Amino acid sequence: MLKSHSEQIGRRLFVFVMIIVLSILCISIPLVISHYREYQKSQTALIEIENLRAVAALANRISRERGPANMAMSSSQEEFEKNKQALIEYRAGVDEQIKVSIHRLDQSGYDGLEEYVAQYLNPKLAEGRKQVDHYISLPFAERTPEALDQAILTMFNAWDSSHDLLKKLVMQSKSKDSSMGHYYTMILVLADLRDQAGRVASNVTAHVTFQQPLPSDNIARALQTQKQVRYLWDLVNTIQPERHRTAEFARLHQEVKTQFIDQGLPIIMRLIDESRKGQPYFLSGTELSVAVSGKFLTVIDLQDYLLNKSVEIAKSEKDANQLNFLLTLIVSLISLLAALFTMIYVQRKVISPLIMVRDKLVELSYANALVDSNFIEDQQKQVHSLHEAMQKLQKMLHQRDEFEFELKNIANTDKLTGVSNRFALEAYTKLMEAQPNKFTQTCLMIVDIDYFKQVNDQYGHVAGDQVIQQVANCLSHNVRSTDLVVRFGGDEFLVLIENLDLEHGLRAAEKMRKGIGDLQFTDEQGQSFTVSISVGVAVGADSWKALFAKADQALFRAKAQGRNSVSS
Image (cartoon, rainbow, N blue to C red; front, side, top):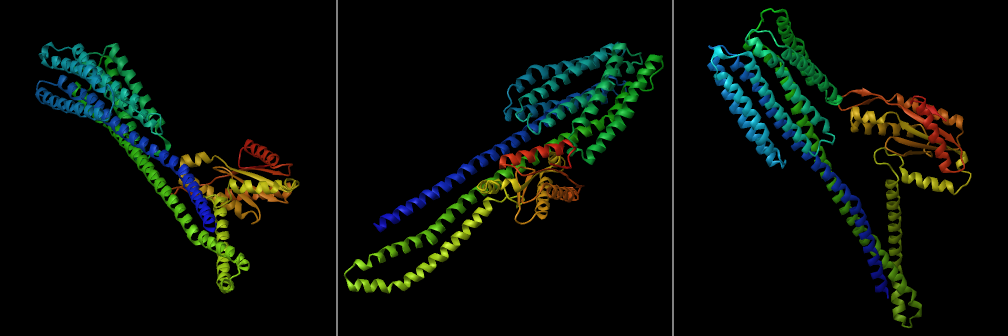
């Protein structure tokens, strides 16, 4: 019978261990899967951003082909051969980049893009080059500004096809709606800005080359292009996130304004003005290409910086998500092993000795019923060892009580701040509900950090955690050890003080508000900032729900007053 009962205790212990293990698995597995999916998403986003950068670079190469094409078409007889050879070499580089980009997209699993290049991009580029080559093949005496302008416009169509390829790539990207989404917009805008900057001079090149007045259509295109350039330039500054506006971004952005907007565009306006007045142009066609191309190099520098920055940030997010996944996996495994180790330890050091003592006590209970005097004498000799076993049992029970107290303390404490959590609050309110008049003598304060989301967005989550910890410390230092401070939500705290009237409650809340307002915080860059709180105070109610509702309404009034205030 004794052996059977011991076996039952062993089975119950095994069931208890399995429940704990299953509970840990139920918590850990979803967390591990969630972090792994976030890591996969960030890895996909990085690949897509790198592909977008490659296709944007291809679109830029196609756009820049107009430069050597215009140089060759507007060359004098002395410079013609040199500029024609430069054009041939540049085209070879573009063709090679098209092959590399398409191979990369095909390896990344994009559908239909290779067919689009074959059916639309390559034919448009070939048509533009055909027009350029046809014009170059004409004798100088047979060349006209209209033919030159038509060749330039046909090359515009080639870039339009490459831009459509870029947009199709964005549409197929899985991460365009994620936190990296604004970089997709940025890449499209930058590609368009780069091309529009290149078109500024191309719209007037043909007639400047022939020293003939600009047709109204060319003037309209030139003015519209300049307007589009200014709009896109302002748009880049607008959509760039505030936290990513580095000193390098500010410098490059200012160089675009100084070199291209303030100095490059006026060159075109001067040529248009000279055409309208019938004056000779102050530049030739090739001189115009050289002058303006040097100015919009600043646009290319800004674009390259932002494209590289977007890839850098995507890599950073991928590395952070990978680290989170690995940490979650490791912590989950450690928790599981710790649970198993704890239960094995308890079974060997606590349960087994208890079973042994219990069995011995049962055996002794039958001692008086045995007629064998020798057996009774033997049992009496074991009394001394049993006394030692009881002392050992008492010590183990005391250790168990300490262990249980530590577990309860961990369960009722918020890990980040060290103050009480919702479990502690629930236990406290249940204790108070057992005493009907207890809530009529209790002061409840609801404390909310003002604009806490802006702290996380502007200074980062590490700084946000620092704010929450310091606010919790300040609240704890301004109450008695018998009072309860609870972290109720992300940036919301509760303070419960027994036997405190409303007047003293408002004074205490105001002291907390001023104390937190005097705190100084620093972010990872060493930048200092402060925060404020809004406090709703309520004293006395028939129940916990009624008391909480009163304090919540008071908090609402405090925020309606403009925040950083106390209300009751």
